[in-house]
Amino acid sequence: MPDDLHAQPTADVARAELAAEGVAPAQLRVSPFVPLQQPIFRAVWFASLASNFGGLIQAVGASWMMASISPSAEMVALVQASTTLPVMIFSLAAGAIADNYDRRRILLTAQAFMLAVSIGLAVVAWFQLITPWLLLTFTFLLGCGTALNNPAWQSSVGDMVPRRDVPAAVTLNSVAFNIARSVGPAIGGAIVAAAGAVSAFIINAFSYIPLLIVLARWKPPKVERLLPRETLVIAMSAGVRYVAMSPNIRAVILRAFAYGFGAIVGLALLPLIARDLIRGGPLTYGVLLGAFGAGAVAGAFMSARLRRAMSTETLVRSTFVAYATGVTLVAISSTIWLTMAGLFVCGACWVLSLSTFNATVQLSAPRWVVGRALAIYQMAAFGGMATGSWAWGRSAQYAGTEQALLISAAVLLAGAALGLRYPLPPLEELNLDPLSRWREPKVAVDIEPRSGPVIVTIEYIIKPEDVVAFLKVMAERRRIRRRDGARHWTLLRDLTDATLWIERYDSPTWVEYVRQNQRVTQADAEIGERVRALHSGPNPPVVHRMIERQTASLPHANATRAPTLADSLSDPSRPA
Image 1 (cartoon, rainbow, N blue to C red):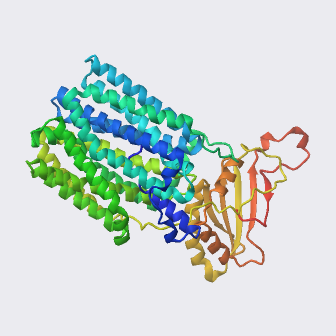
Image 2 (cartoon, one colour):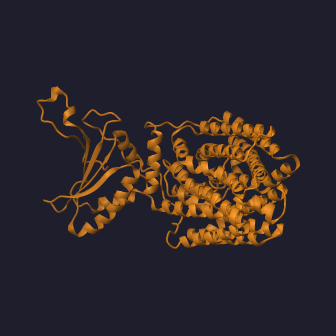
Image 3 (cartoon, rainbow, N blue to C red):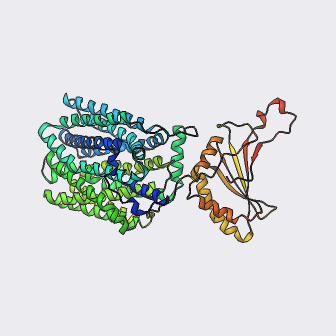
């Protein structure tokens, strides 16, 4: 079920959306337990809490089993990598699926798949057929289920509780996971120490059943779609395009990768820290992981206060430095209490940094693409974790666990310095609701949704003294058009009339043109208003919508008519 990588920041998004609707901050100060009054949320919350406990117990069993059956530090670190690698590989596709299909069915599919994998792992381990690579295969498959589950889970909270209760609901989800992480690993360590790793795998398999029952009984409201679903490839490319054309999200992705690469050392090498530096067993490993989880709980409760007191970049840069300090403390410690203190600091920084990254992505993406934007962010974060797990495992293999921890601390300090070149933007409360002004125009030519390409031109009259300002605002307009799906955007100037400027772009089909215009947000409206304010003609800018036609495809019956290369769908009264 969801972890703190995606849970907490949705509350910030909900607050931003409610503030945009005129809801005063005082109205948002409701009890954090109000969402539990909703039967479906209450049932899902308790079921997911049980699932979180099972997953963490399984993680302890898998990590300790690998440390027991393989002498290689690299193989131990690869347990963590095998869990995070699928999220890096499959998140984008999962985000596209979550944005286009029934989220309840996606959640059921993901949970059922993870149940089947967990049963398979328990059976293989019970009959003592497990090998290091087979164990990695099972943990990789569980990571695949997590990759499918996460985007759908993130997007479904608003379907379970009223809009006003979303912030409290997300906070409760974050608290549930971190409660499990605080005590679950210690319980897992005790179970592994007393009954072996096989028992941990069996418990994890049973933990999926309550959640499957709750999801099967849930009947969320169905949303009517006005346009056909995007194909998976088109949906994925639209998500990549949006992120590529969004500077704020690009900065988050770079910093998240750097943080994931350096910070994962605390979790990837934790079995080795417990076994080699502290000279403990599986119970010690569980206690250390619990200290990390306790720090995460503390970080979750401190996050709101710290965000009010510090800028986004200052907060994230501080977490880089503090995590490096915690890792250094763990490297030089030979006592469990000092190691727990270092891991407590690391856990708090883990939640603070990842939730800030996530909040920035959510506040920078509208709802139609938020699943894919978050998926790409998760690909970067988990990609850093997967490569970092492998890198720190190899470092520990050849240089020792202490040296690997110290090197990772230096990498984290370099990641903090990266903020000087690529700072994170402030958490602006942009109104990313659809603008909803555009209406599909009536056309004089018979077309179908798949007809295209559709070519659009918009004519502006710009005074000479406004040219510089016009070019600046059109540069931003170009970014927005291309981000939302326009192709081959160009700006033309008439050679016989110096005041006439023509914006031109195309869409592959008519339905994609309609979809592109429906993606315009309230925040984007400012650019359109600035463009129209610079237009000095007596009438609004003239818009021509045309569909490309090849002369060879014209019917014989129309041979008497002069052939044209484009059929005009003009409508000068509407903006495009």
